[in-house]
Length: 245
Ligand SMILES: Nc1ncnc2c1ncn2[C@@H]1O[C@H](COP(=O)(O)OP(=O)(O)OP(=O)(O)O)[C@@H](O)[C@H]1O
Image (tube, rainbow, N blue to C red):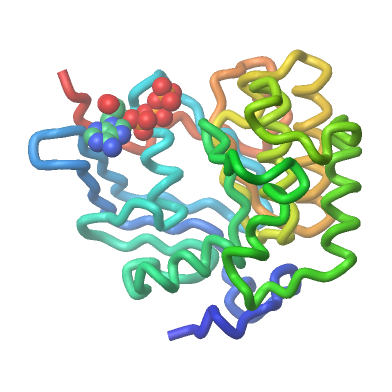
């Protein structure tokens, strides 16, 4: 088993990142509870370095799928490889490290900690995993990111004193601070006006180009779809999805 605890190489092309696919699913099955919403992915491969939009109607399982990719939810059976690792082989502890070291997550509800200010929220991954040593360069990067998203003057603000769109922008900064190899973003522009939406998308796309990272973005915004390398409609990849009545 890979020792995540000693893996501080977040951006470089480590051996496991030479895999062609960043996501590979085979006969993946998941359900929240017996008789509840269930999801089945017979076969899915997403190539490394691609920027993918994940679309589909509300309640179809987009967030569920993203949470499976992040190892937050565990599949019942089948194969799920993310960034070259078969998630079923790892403990909860390893999966937590995997998320911090390899993934950039932007959640639908942002998941900012209320008792941390913007700056501290962005640097949270360094508190969660002490192996990630917090250096001056990270503090500078956090400030640069806040400036890029237009929140330079709100560095010390707490989430409760921010608008939804501002919280979302802080969540974007936090997702990028560890230089992840895969970004999983759940509607990262849902609360933003067109100018801020474009600004955030540019930051995410530029990041992926620069770091050769992959990105999967859940979105309902049809205006932005043509910017992605690939559009995946969840109805095409989950043929056996069972909606709850
Ligand atoms: N924790 C849970 N326990 C049981 N069922 C759940 C849970 N979370 C979500 N569901 C159900 O799973 C289904 C898929 O939800 P999910 O949030 O993945 O859909 P979505 O496509 O992301 O929707 P939206 O576009 O509205 O965000 C829904 O029917 C939802 O009610």
